[in-house]
Structures are given as C-alpha cells and as structure tokens.
Length: 283
Ligand code: ATP
Image (cartoon, rainbow, N blue to C red):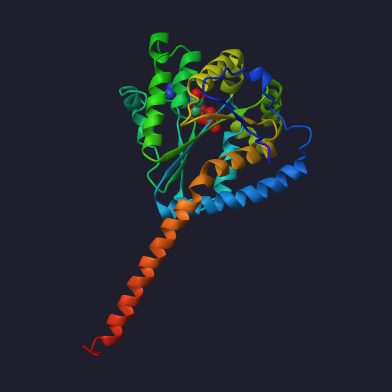
C-alpha cells in the first residue's frame, strides 16, 4: 500500500504549495474508506496492546490551519480506540501562569506515561507558529525554539515515547469553503468565528511558519507527516495508516510481554488453587 501521508525526510526542504491536499487519482473514496476500516481495526488492537503491555507511550501531535479538521481527526481516533488508554490534551492561548514559565512547562506535564496514548490538539508548535506570525515574542526568542523542541522530543523518544506528528494540510480554497459552510449550517454556527477570517489574512505567513517548523523539526526520531486533508475520508485514512505503521514494529514485543505476564498469572492461580485444596476447610 502506498503511504497516503507525506513523510518529511529529515533535512529536506518543504514546499507546501507543491504537496497535494487531495487523493491520488487511483484512489477512490470507496476504496479509501474500505482501507480505513481495516486500518482502524489494527489501530484498536495496537492501542490495546500498548495499554496492557505498558512499555511505551504514544504522543500524537495534531497541527493544522483553522478548519483543517483537527476535531474530526480526534473524533476518528477516539471512535477507533479503547477510550481507557486515550487522552486528549488541548493547547489554547496560554494562561498568565503558563506565560510565567518556559514554553514547554505546560506541554511536558501533558505528555503520556507508559501505556498511554495522548493526542495533542495543537501543541508546543504554536510557540513557533501563532507566536511567530503575530510577533508575540521577539524573533530572537522564537528562533531558538526549534532546537529546543528537537531536544525536548529527543528526550521523549529516548524515554520510550513514540512521537507521531501530523500537519493537516488543506488548500486555501478548501478553507474558504469550510468557513462559508459554517455560516450556512445552523448546527455549525457555534463554530463561527470572526477570528478565523482574520487569521486567514495571515495565510501566507502561517504557511511559511509551518514550512519552517516542518523542515527544522522533522528528525529521525520524531519526523513530521503531512496529511492531505481537503477530503476528510483521506485524512482519516492517512492518519490511521501512519499510526499503524509507527506502532506495528512494537507489536511482537508487546505480545511477548503479555504472554509472559499471562503465564505468570496462570502459575499464580495454580499455586493459589493448590494451596486452597490442601488448606484445612472451615478454619
Ligand atoms: P481549534 O481550531 O483547534 O478547534 P479553537 O480555535 O476552537 O481550536 P480556541 O479556544 O480558539 O480553540 O484555542 C486555540 C487558540 O489558542 C488558537 O487560536 C491558537 O493559536 C491559540 N494558542 C495555542 N497555543 C498558543 C500559544 N502558545 N500562544 C498563543 N496562542 C496560542
């Protein structure tokens, strides 16, 4: 199966305008949805193994322009995994307390423990995106953050966290359609925001900031994946496929650990039964 997300090779240049936001010609929606069903079942199984084996943590980072479909992607993941081991961590405008600390303070606290699958809805990357586009701190400050982010993510991967980073890539036209659709659909009116139209005026600055973040922070340990996101079914397919590919190499180890644990539990149960059978009754 070809990869439906675009892997940003470490050290390579990113030209977002040249990366498609739509499905390749030979992939129909029907075929894509059928593939997603298969991958979603694998995702569910892998997340269960991750949870019970407790050997690794998974951190999924979700970034994208407004309306890129972060909420839909979250819903897709939650629907296809055991909610017990999954947690969503949203990152909003920092509070006063958060602003009194370094930019990773609030982020580090939300990282997954072993066995946990955590999805960041926005992330530490906002500190080189919105912060850069709106000059919220001087360039001298944000420009140092790429390296700090790489070191932070290396710390996580060295501590057995599997980091999967997604940039949901939509076209400017698709964003306009989605913003207009919100105005027409009464059930989506709550999502309307003048702020989204205002942010759209900074489209080019955001694309430039995203390109830099994708280029500077795609590392061997924690590479970026660009997800074509104009079509929601393709977005879900690419996300499921990428996570399954990232977790599959660990599957055999998790299963082995669980089968060893199973053997220990069985032995303990047998001991208990034997002891119970030989113990005097009624005492
Ligand atoms: P979404 O579009 O992800 O569903 P939202 O726009 O509905 O989220 P908001 O309550 O607006 O949710 O919170 C997200 C806002 O917080 C975004 O505008 C984002 O740019 C901003 N934000 C997140 N992190 C930071 C940061 N470190 N500094 C400044 N602004 C930030």
